[in-house]
Length: 493
Image 1 (cartoon, helix red, strand yellow):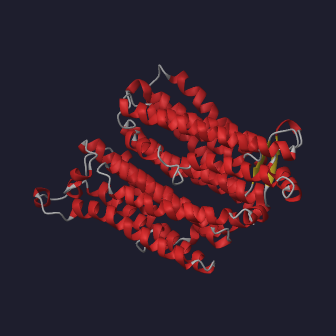
Image 2: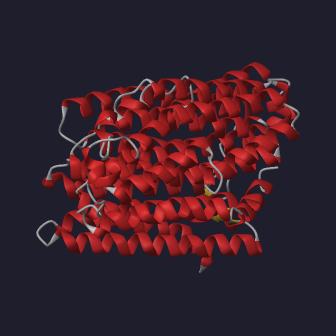
Image 3: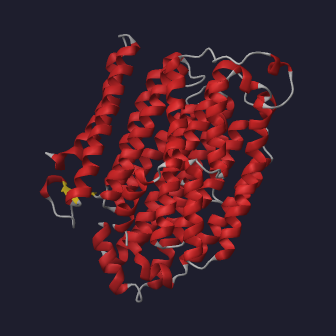
């Protein structure tokens, strides 16, 4: 029975997207409740899968009893099981928040369509994580790209259409780039299954080194655009600034991370360390990661819109992840994976707390945050936890991930990149601390008032409080997930 759970998860997600329109003439609360139960079921199922693979090891699922040479194959191991749990848990929190937020500016008639898109998006994410085939990964990537574009553009505003158009154009270029790389790999190996491709490449890559270099280049650039890796990030700030806060939280906290995980599968499972080291991919990733950490922060400092600032902050934080992966050591990959989880939680907390402020105050400019901590203490406190985590202050999950990354850099004897990490942290201080200080400490008339809990629905406050607590809990007890991450990384080396 346990071997059927991955398929059950996919069918539940896709089936829910198909069922939602049937509830059109019924109270929408019924649809919301059904979707919640489905998400909860998928989360519990994913937890069972994770426990199973940690105890008994990985397993494969073959569709139609075809072998992996010609059939579709899923690989359920610690890597896929762990990150599906993370995705399901974070989406469940964001989903609860969206009940009363009305997804921030979306017209009522589009509200149901939004959840249809959300469940198709989740279906594609689970498919990407489970898939053990280059082409089927591409199919799921395309579904994810289309649904991501749709949840950006669902607000009927000119700027959302502009951001969505830029997103879809760049992502189609990225998709074609990835597909061309897949075609080149298939041309020289005759396989699409990840394990068969990896086995073939190890024996023939000296004979087809030019093809492989071009394939890696196309596939890395394709995934890099979708993951908003600097300098391929230009679609991300506009998408975050114009999309609903729930969409921004999903895009930054989850979607771009999934593409990074695709890159990890390509580099570690398909091409392997021998090819990666021979082609000096390590230094390319270290340079791109470092550039992203610095330039993303510099661009964030210049922003006046809080959501655009958070978008550029994501570019910087993605840089940390790429730097960790680029070390190509177990310690570096562990730090990168921890930061994927940590940043997902922190960025969701930041975007959703800003969403509450937009819901209550209808402001989005940084100058309007003066004294807002006294009007909205819960939202700004959670925002502050997220901001402190982004800077890397102790007792937050962000500190743990940056500390682990620093240790990994030292172990790799690359002290220069430790300086980059510290410098990026200081730049984070420049654009996060003024917001917190202005909200709570700046002298204005709001300070004369007694702080009170903001008058927003509890169903919006509970999720952001949950995320705020998670930031602190992971900062105090990182081994809650680090022990699992160690097992996950062990499957890639």
